[in-house]
Length: 536
Image (tube, rainbow, N blue to C red; front, side):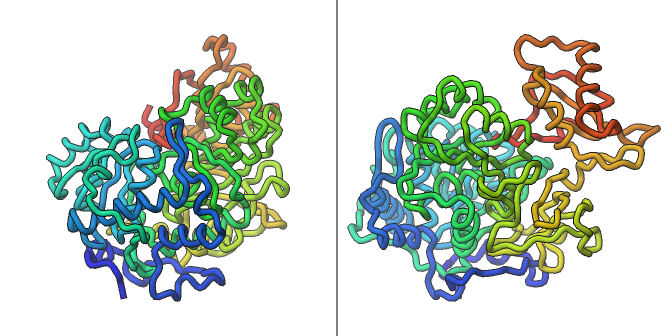
């Protein structure tokens, strides 16, 4: 029986026959009568004896786990006792990565409410669409981001109010308006299948969807990749660029550090490549999360100013070119942990630890999940053949009232929409998104491998590759290239790049069309938006 009174989201979940099949670990979380992910994570820290160690850090403040739980309890009682929200109500969260944003997220979920986090760069139109779908009761918004949200609220007036918070002071208005403080931590007695968050996809395909995750989903994910691949420790300090509104950032920069009793450092302003390297050295960062493009931009700075404390670098969000992996290893001495995950499955499900890396492969299926590479009919293809990746595990896709559920979940399997090749040892080699495979004159060409080849040329800073319609070949490979400083676009350079790719890959894979651009269209999380390249 649900512990959430407001059943709006529960009623909009996919029908039983459209849900994924789950594989649960031996911890038995799914059988508990009461399960609240925030309370459970704090309780695990307490059992380990680490409540007095640092948890949330910034240049201005450090909160221990005990202090953070006190604030979470305070905000929770404010939301429930004073604002009269009821478990199951949605709360829209809007803010940059900060201690205040983290505390608000934890308090919302601790209260049995459903967190609807939004990217800071979203404008009123996009926020209006989220509000229309999620129907939040309240919004907690960073002060500097209020304007667009107020316009969106005027367009979709479902919320009872918008409360601002200041990232420079712990929780600002929320804390100031909280008249009650319970010394004994308070939490809502949710059940495993109660909903913790709505995660809106990042828009790489142009039309965001709302993925639903329960308290059990989040804890289930903790028992997979963080436990078996990341292996963080209580003395680790975690930093990274992914927003907390993105499940890659939420897991890496909040949930998984709690799972390992680690510390998290939040910057005062968004990271730039040079400042991130500087801060990593200053705060003693040991684990870093960011996207491949950002690692490539950080490389010259970490080469100049090494970070001796850094021991783990995690790359996800988009395909990791081998050229970027090798560049980072050369300048930092660290073998990256690559991974592929999805908003729909919360986090990473294919990855390998640094000692098990195989060149060109993302990795093997993460313990706790099972994976297959199949054809269009769901039949397993031979090793070495291109096919669709299908996944089962402790998390799965549950779209909120969306007809695309049937595309993602078929016969209990999750289909993230990626094409892979698997070898005899179970290593998975990413080829492309299933709608991005370039078929030219009957040959299959994966955009990531062409991008990787281009990135090996000293003139290329970053690039994106798509298939362009062609009457003779069906498609031709087209590349959009951003040049490094000191290199000038020219027809001669195009020919040089084409020959460069031909020397690395089969000749039919070279880009017949090359456009030089100043930048590439990316989501706020750094993912390349190929659909926008196709519109150019």
